[in-house]
Length: 131
Image (cartoon, rainbow, N blue to C red):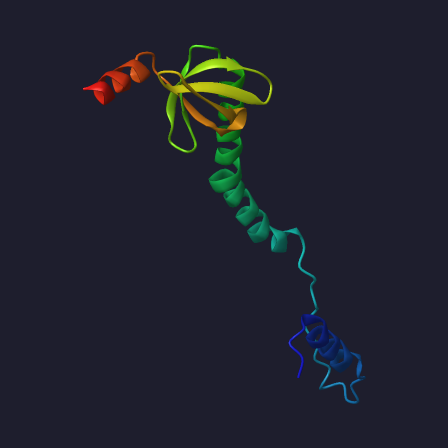
């Protein structure tokens, strides 16, 4: 037993190839139609749906993160992916030196910076931790 469409099509084609003996029984077998472009509408629709729901927003977030990293300068207040809040002391192509407390400087990879915080966030948090 086979579940392939081509076997079913071959079986119908074989039945229609058998010559009819009487003229009263000359019933025409239904023509076998191959699915055309109409058969591709549903899969293409699904692909377009997934593009707009998953792929497009992800690429947009990636572009925004990349531009944020390029615009980051020394003195910016940042949060890393690990949750550390600090102030950027210096940066190069691959690494950023972040001051997380007085005289405590950490070196993190540039792409590990999750977001740039508004000015003053680091100073407020330092005051809260001292009191």
